[in-house]
Length: 375
Image (cartoon, rainbow, N blue to C red; front, side, top):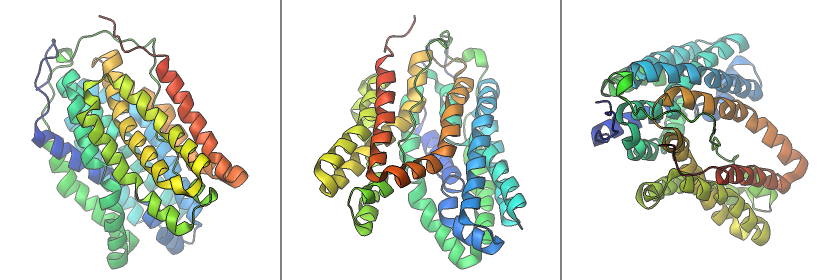
């Protein structure tokens, strides 16, 4: 089912999108969103500070950044199906090792194994899988899986909390490990097998024009409190971010898919700075608008990370290129909570200007690119 040389192969079927979207929901819920719920019970049981658990999680993000290019090359060569199936086994092994952890070192090693799964089994790998199969017809499928997996935190946080309450954090880790083997692995096994690498879009690479890797802006809840919102209001407004991300992805799937992904990325990059301006100018009353703009922009940028490199460079070598593009983004993502925490401690609400400036610089970088592609 690989795309032909003309890039005229049909797009992904709903069954493929649903299977990959559900597998991605499982992967995100059991890795990226796990520490938020289990850090406290893990730290308490192992006699560690919660910061030590998050430090291990940050180390996993660094490992995922290093693994990304390797996984991307493997997808380019063999297709995404075997790579994603292997990541389910890696995730299961890492989560089982986490359940057996007895101290800081064993916990760190378990998180590092999970980091290998994250580097080869989250969005970038899924995007590369779709591009390997469908070439330039992959844009709608990329949007589709992000719409489904956008609910990973909505599903993962309550389920992890329930498992922790019922069987403890070790049982929760084992349950997620089992789900990778009995649910995730079969879902990824349903993906089509990729054809030969030569069958993918033969357009030449334009690596001399690197696209800006669009990364989500930092989390917004703490600066909203610093801006004058109460804790209850900040939590309520923060709950709008998730639905806003899904709404942004629906907008991309509907109206914005008619535009070049570069234009969508530019509009999305402006959303966070506009939200900051509204919050600073109008105060806590504008907090809902800030959360909606921040979430919608972040949702669209998640899709742009997959569609923009495809539109600018073509499908040839997409997987390896995605891995290299995401390497600095993942490394900075590992440092972002700590660095932004320092910014909040030093500048309070002024930290919002830092995140706004970063997203404005991303917008400027996107303006420097051109939508046209070398024939």
